[in-house]
Image 1 (cartoon, one colour):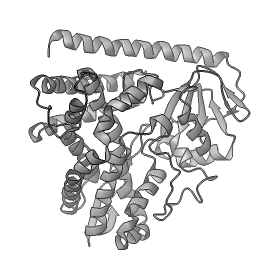
Image 2 (cartoon, helix red, strand yellow; image 1 turned 120 degrees about the horizontal axis):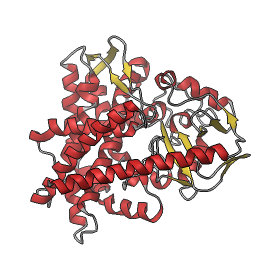
Image 3 (cartoon, helix red, strand yellow; image 1 turned 135 degrees about the horizontal axis):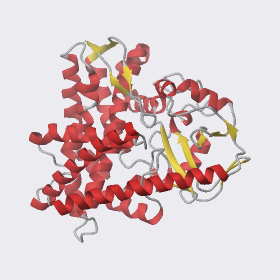
Image 4 (cartoon, one colour; image 1 turned 135 degrees about the vertical axis):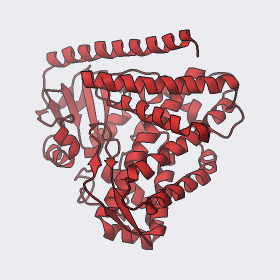
Length: 428
């Protein structure tokens, strides 16, 4: 990797940061000028207490109006399932171009594009997620699930986040991207640093996290550029190998392939880790529900859907209003930053009976844990396959899950899951 490449990479990042700062300042000015006709709320998605326990706050949102506005954050909030689904679907009025996090940050990746550009990028990467492609990776998923569950079984009292919830998706993504076993430790370190960009904030602490995220991203960028240069991925049964085979005309550039690898990390790594960790914590807290799955493995797919609804590993997504956007009697002004609360929508009492209860037989087909509309998560089936494989191993080989000590949960508003969870698995 040449110095010129590194300068170009850094300049593009700095340019994106500059655009982010300008866009946020412009949005604040627009919101200050706008007339607020929504219900004013003190609900703050960035409050540490709310992040630690968001569900009581969601209940308060549901008890109020359809649209809330937080003047401290200049943030418009949608929390009801129908409103969130419609807003996620309407990408002509509510844009994804400023990124899925609260702070606006533009990047040329699938989650930050709309319209024709989004459709083109999605078509280009779809070959990596066909039914045949997914089925070809099932043996890898099953093997990793078996290995990680056995590791937790053989180490009573261990932190299952470090032993299972992180290694499972990182190990899978490493194999799918063609990272050899000798490089997996480096890859894991880079990927854990890179995903911190999802919690970007324009603060001193946020800048420090951003530096770490950019260091991880740069190391990853250099690694994959080297792989592309030597041609090691061509003809391989990896995601990038398949995409190279499908794009012989060169329509996908090296940088677009790299951005796709990063997207797979951001969308398929952290959220899956949160789902797996949350699944173990939830099954430990509801042993009677776990027993139902143990006696009937046909409940496994339905249980994963209920876990996705109940946990909502991705708690919120953000949009920018391109025009005045009407929700009921409220007009959200053009330029406003709008939070679509996935976590609240998945516990909407107008849709789900006793939404704060966990029932493996609920079959919550309306949940939007993977988004909705054009931006429905392209790796949703891959995450489902991982979670189902791990749950099948637990239901087969474990009779009881016990939590040791006090679990620690993530402290970011965007993603939610355990960061430390010591467990003891009782063998079946």
